[in-house]
Image (tube, rainbow, N blue to C red; front, side):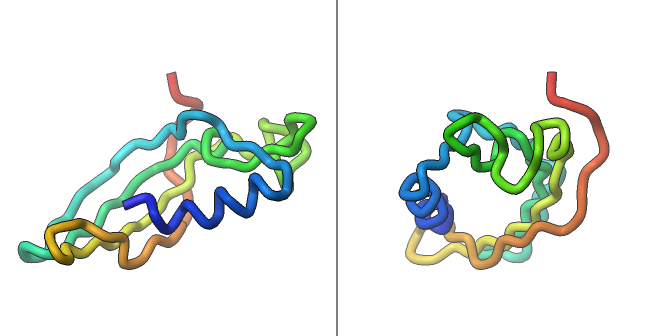
Length: 101
């Protein structure tokens, strides 16, 4: 399931960037479509999924405060050869709420 993200992480590490050890994600909904397709809507806390420069600043932002929001991601998954794979994953807007507890 995470294979599409590996290339992005490898490129970030080559640039000397880091990521948080745990990404904070809330599942908003899971909508099956038949037995081999499903759509997952998730909300991801941006500071936990962002890349960080060596000095600790988030890449592309001045501070963590500038990126403190929940991004909404739509993920379409398909069952192929007994495994769920990500067919598409797109960010689409934000989710309500403040920082995770």
